[in-house]
Length: 198
Image 1 (cartoon, rainbow, N blue to C red):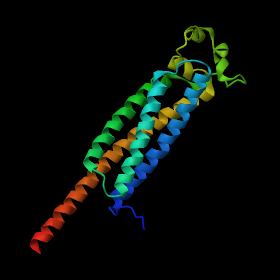
Image 2 (image 1 turned 120 degrees about the horizontal axis):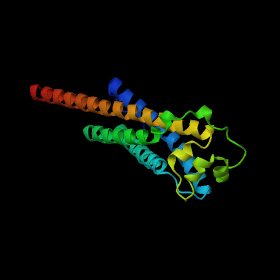
Image 3 (image 1 turned 90 degrees about the vertical axis):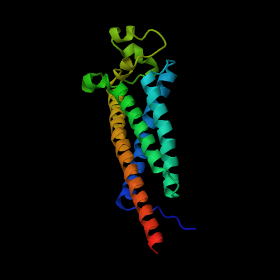
């Protein structure tokens, strides 16, 4: 049995590259956000909705990316429908990137304290009183979380940057799907004309 991807020229290679990049970025986002959620859960706090939303969108998107590439590889992918779904994931990625990045644009990570030897479970004792006072209840606000220390700040900024990269990748893959759909439709029409002329 011989495996070979569809031969669709530069657009086909671009589609494969887009899916590979999306998969890599999504795995990185899932790793970082799940680590944050684990640390917060260990501290017996409720995770911020922004992190849960980013993890949910990323897990859904990685399943979608894998399934659509398998269908593409087997020549069974409905390209126009896939372009629409990529557009919807683009919108979801924009929303997640906007929510994650909202407090980060004004936050200077270098001004935050360097991560201390204490674990995240005791983070509230290391925070200034004003920040600590806002997190008395079990729910942890997103701004409180990103302002814990430099490491957390830089890591969440990495998630934000990866989210912006996902926006670009899904926009591009949506356009590539439309281009592939047009190409296959045009080639199909050309084959039909040859059959009629023959």
